[in-house]
Length: 461
Ligand code: NAD
Image (tube, rainbow, N blue to C red; front, side, top):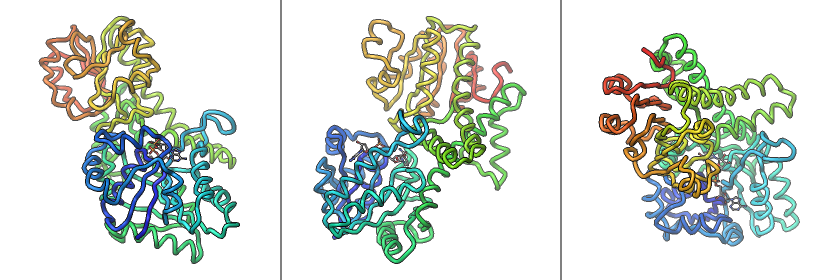
């Protein structure tokens, strides 16, 4: 029986390993992590991450061919194939600070694999890593070659999106596997492909060399983020010209060379990956003297930052140039709907911007905990009770009661169907709505009496 060990039980490691266990009942899958709290949550009824459909998959496989453990050494040593899905954040200090990927976690996982392995293994890069990371990993692993153990490294980047992770894993648009040229590398590719063959159609599995696979993942995120920044840049132009960004997006989407996806203007992109991976790309370009290429990608992040600050400025300027002491309801804090993840969510910058102008915030998100929001805003829980500048509340009606304005920062479906007449009746007047996700019906809200700002549409019409 093939044994798999997944190192890292996070947003990628947890769902990907769970789906492998689901689709391959004959394979034993052990997911290990150094975080005891994460592993005990995976073993409980309250999983550490929210993802539609995840709970059902875990419940179906846990205790059968899927287990979660902190015994990293044991499960590495028993495995034939090791998927490494540890975090690769942006380096905070030292060489490449603020841009390069921090491979500390990867290196320590690789050293652990090298130290405890007594049989040949395939080591799979699932994390997003800089191009040519496999070369460094090979060096770390082969320091063990005196024991005669052989390692093959494969790059198998993950393309799931949070919020649709299970669906993306069960029906992937592609699976990418990069390996070394030569018979051993090709054999390793075939072994990994053999796992995906259980449920992924042949024509969706792409095999490449290692470096193409590593770079394709960085390119993928850079292209997606660039599309968002492109439409957001257009939204700024719409606001000053009378064009409407939804109409521009619609027109663009009908061009078959462009297509409809990732053309929604918004308050900006968030999540743990886009900014980190573009910064990483920028660092790699700069390290190779490709300064103009680096500048090109840097601009995608600059436009994103500009979009968030433009939104805050629009809120303040619309509300008579001050939000000091005014209650603003913040609806949504996660970086997108259907996830509890707040990493790099635009809500952090928007809330901090509004707090900087002394607004009082009443924040509601259906899946993000109070503790997480306060941590993200660098506030202790005392701040909510003593200063009362930030309150985390249990529903949207409570958040909007007596508020002067509403900021929609996550596109949760429930915000589309609120009783906006009731919301309006309970707010201070004039009542403002700032739709940072363009999910609401502007005309209906105006009929009720709201002053509405949505992205890429002039305020006064
Ligand atoms: P995460 O922080 O949620 O999970 C990483 C986990 O690895 C943590 O639980 C951490 O405790 C564990 N870990 C770190 N070092 C370890 C070690 N030596 N041994 C065992 N466990 C260890 O991160 P994530 O969001 O799952 O992302 C993981 C990687 O996947 C990153 O490289 C990311 O860029 C990439 N990725 C993320 C997404 C996404 O949507 N989140 C999508 C595709 C790819």
